Image (cartoon, rainbow, N blue to C red):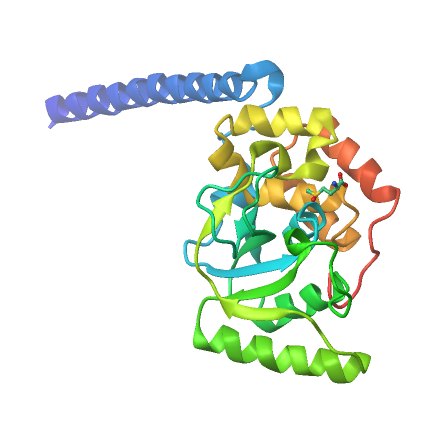
Length: 269
Ligand code: MHO
């Protein structure tokens, strides 16, 4: 009995010491993680990627729209809660592999990947009508107003909302509603154009996402590009600042930008 107690004590003590050693090494790992978090001059957030990207939904739907110069729409649609990411390119023409200086009949186009449980295609169409002048003939095919539908349902909703737009404006809307065919990604320097004007913020994101395809697929990047362009709401920015993966200096800069004029809160962001 006495012997058993001794064994128990030794075992418990042993486990205690082992536990202490293990927890010490856990503390060490944590320290290492924190150190890893400040690699690249403090630019990579702890845990690697911005929280908003880590929790991005897997299932998204796509809207493909052309509404003039694609820099603005990239920013405006990127600011909408429920939009997971955006990318811009060329669609609707006849040539393969168009470039900005050789469009081959394509139009500047945005692709919006959205979470249909948070934002609907109808809501995106409202923003579409609200963001350009669909009753004016554009300067060239490059800036044409087009809805490229991906399904019969999108086609129906687009036709319906075009009719609404016509009766609202009392003018004839030139917007084409045609099936989606192929999307050609635009050159890197066009993607998230407004964010690119903020060198320090851009640097932070390029440190997190050195590959352009990852940069383009980031919700954090889409949102910040939205805020820099003056879109989004202050309310949303305050809610999500900490999830965007920016450093303290970056967050302060973004709040300064917002301070110079975000829409303070409206029904359609
Ligand atoms: N050339 C115009 C439009 C650019 S856009 C990507 C500008 O420099 O503002 O078509």
